[in-house]
Image (tube, rainbow, N blue to C red; front, side, top):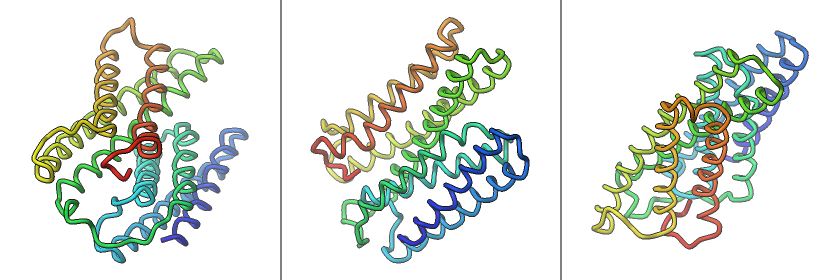
Length: 260
């Protein structure tokens, strides 16, 4: 899968440079090029995932290496959807560097694939992980919207444009919360089948609940007019930091039953 990852990094990076040139100079050709470079990178990335599935016989979700590649793919896919469905070209300036960094970080963590452990051979495990990373990708998009909102507000941009990024962040949190809730439900069923209990007092599970609780609060805060704006944008940025710690920090710094 390594050649696919390296080529994906190159295509995503060229696409990112192109969209930055597009925003800096207004060059429409650079904007068009950036779209198709992202699509090309996504196709290569997808081919790499299928190659991993073919070589291991299971979905690429069993190690830190595989999940980093999968997380990057979900972020790139969400970015492409936003570009082609909503014609929005600014959020990718934040989301795509995160996708690229995830791939770069995956390279030194590369491990040979193998058959799944018996405890992981259930559709509940795959549902749990897929829903988790769908949520992570949407929380990444929410982070992007909130960060751009704060940047534009600091620069004194008019309220109508700011509202667009507020709504991007809010809708991303709503759908991210939905997928994360589905992930926690699937994880609870999987835990019951594996260990005979729906809840484990271990760091990954506890921090996942913190993420769920945090975004539940952010989602409800959107409906309180006084809490919208800068405060909620800052909370969304902080929420993404909590997500990163739950995904990477807990696995690297704490002893957990999860490999990622």
